[in-house]
Amino acid sequence: MAAIDIERLLFSLRDSIHLQHLNSTTHNEHLILGDLYNSLSENLDRALEIYISYGNSVALDAVDIVQIDKEQLNVSRKMLNDYIKTVEQEDYKTVLIDILANISKAIYLLK
Image (cartoon, rainbow, N blue to C red; front, side, top):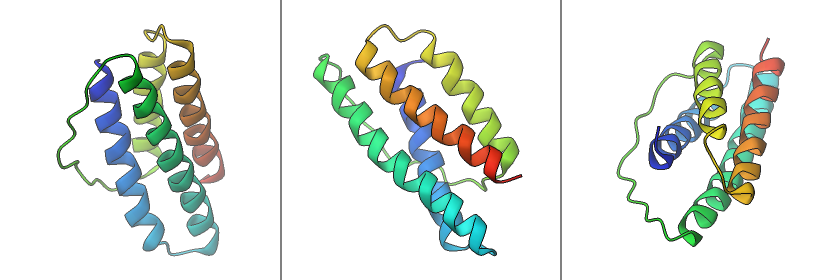
């Protein structure tokens, strides 16, 4: 999976989480998804800045909005984890690991 594919997946995940956060049915879900959305927003910007600093270019068009549930988060976590194993730049890998940790935390909290 190329970096742009994982970034597209994460942007789609972020946007989907934001919509679900705004439509939360419980206060707990609202807080968990809000925290995940905020951390994804910050870390995705940082990841793209690092990715571009290595001479890569990014051309993201519209992303898909999907219903987010624990299964979708688990699939995204696995894809990101597999991708991280291929990343050589430590600073980029560190940001992706932060994103992975935040997704894992949300999965745990959304029991």
